[in-house]
Image 1 (cartoon, rainbow, N blue to C red):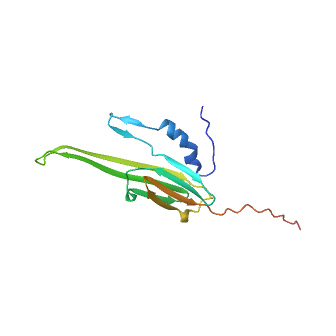
Image 2 (spheres, helix red, strand yellow):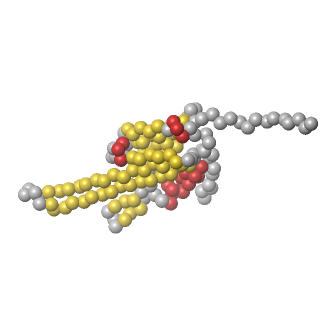
Image 3 (cartoon, rainbow, N blue to C red):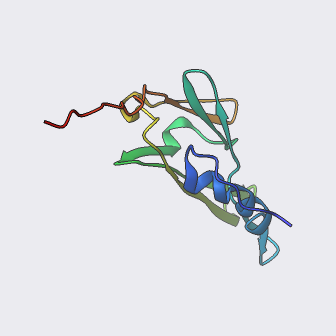
Length: 145
């Protein structure tokens, strides 16, 4: 049985990550098109958090990244065309496939939202979320007069 855990960083996404993989995985629609959840790996380094979005076959122009308050949204839309022609140029078949994806990540106070960067190479979108110094609450004694 799966027990939901809290990891602190990106809590809404990480907590539901396993549930997404197990319960929203691959689904067949009419035995031709497959709807799927794009896998996202999350890694912590000394100075940042990294999101590795596994999305082969796309171009960097297909992606959209946005930050609003403490929410990072990663999405893409990609249209594929598959056309076959006869010798005289008549269309025998024309299929248009649309792939899209949207995922929201809640960021906590440890992320410096103004320094987020992204790079797409070899089918993986790497989003780097730099850490910021979070000052520990100071303890101060107050003298009563």
